[in-house]
Structures are given as C-alpha cells and as structure tokens.
Image (cartoon, rainbow, N blue to C red; front, side, top):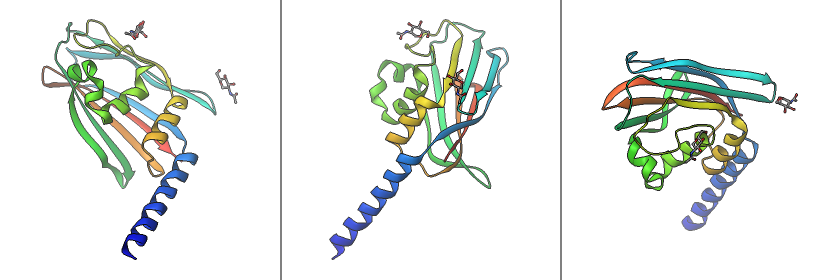
Length: 180
Ligand SMILES: *[C@@H]1O[C@H](CO)[C@@H](O)[C@H](O)[C@H]1NC(C)=O
Ligand SMILES: *[C@@H]1O[C@H](CO)[C@@H](O)[C@H](O)[C@H]1NC(C)=O
C-alpha cells in the first residue's frame, strides 16, 4: 500500500513536471550589469532589446582592462520573486578556468553555460586576453534547454552572476526572466 502510494505520488510529481515542461515559456524581462571594480571591468553596453512581440534578445559587452585574466571564479545564484527576490535552488561558486577546461565536471554549471555558450566568446579556457561579449542571446534556444532539463515552476526569476578575478569581485550581471 505504502509502495503504491509512493509510486502514485512519484507519478503525480512526474506528470506535473512534465506538463510544466511542455507549457513553459521563457521570456527575458530585464538585464543589468554593474562594474564593481571600474579599474578592472567596464560595460560599454548591456541591454535587452525587443524586436517584436516574439523576438527579444540580450547583448552584453564586458571590457577587461587588466589582461590577461588567468584566474577567474563565477558565483551563480538563482532567485525567484516572491516578496522581493529570494534564493532559489542554486547558489554556487565555481572556478571558471577549471570548469571551461573540464565542463563535465560540474553538470549544473554546464547546463547554465549551455544556455549562453553559442552567443558568447567565453568558449575557451583561461587565460582571457580579450573583451567578453554576449551577442544577441535570445530566449528561443533557452526555452528548450531550460525547460527540458530542469522544469521550474512558473514565476519571475533572476539569475545573478558575480565575476571574480584573482578572488576579487569585479562585476555583477543579472538576467531577469519569467516562466509562464
Ligand atoms: C520578429 O522579428 C524577427 C526578426 O526580425 C522576425 O524573423 C520575425 O518574423 C518577427 N516576428 C513577428 C511576429 O513579426
Ligand atoms: C568562440 O567564439 C568566437 C566568437 O563567437 C568564434 O570566432 C570562435 O571560433 C569560437 N571558438 C571556439 C573554440 O568555439
């Protein structure tokens, strides 16, 4: 009986997730970039553009003023809006150089990275000897990736990244999106 009940609960959970997955839609609502250390990073641009109702994209350029960067960490944290943004599921700091060398070593980071990778020149390991660009990242590709792998509940989210070089926080980027 207990086993049956557990099975039923598991089945219900699965169906709910499955439906969430099928009907979710990701939409960017805002993007913000902040240079914490202006001698280290500047953002010539950081914006969300709405081309029309179904096509929006995010473009960001981070100018690195002290090259090369051979030691970098990124703190990834996801927030969900309730009364203000509250931590949700993920908050981790990763060694970016090691991760870019061995992406499979961190499946969760890899999953977030895959959303950005194809739009970015952050596609090789350290050192970094150039500016970092995210070019016209649209949510169409993310729609599939995000909802297929990790079905989240509907709502408003913020994905915050703290960029650290040589263990000092240099910049913060925040991506806001809604799931419906
Ligand atoms: C929105 O803009 C994109 C890019 O210019 C275009 O391919 C698409 O057809 C447009 N969609 C609508 C509904 O106008
Ligand atoms: C990385 O991205 C840049 C710019 O989009 C591209 O020119 C380059 O070929 C890419 N390198 C790799 C290893 O994918």
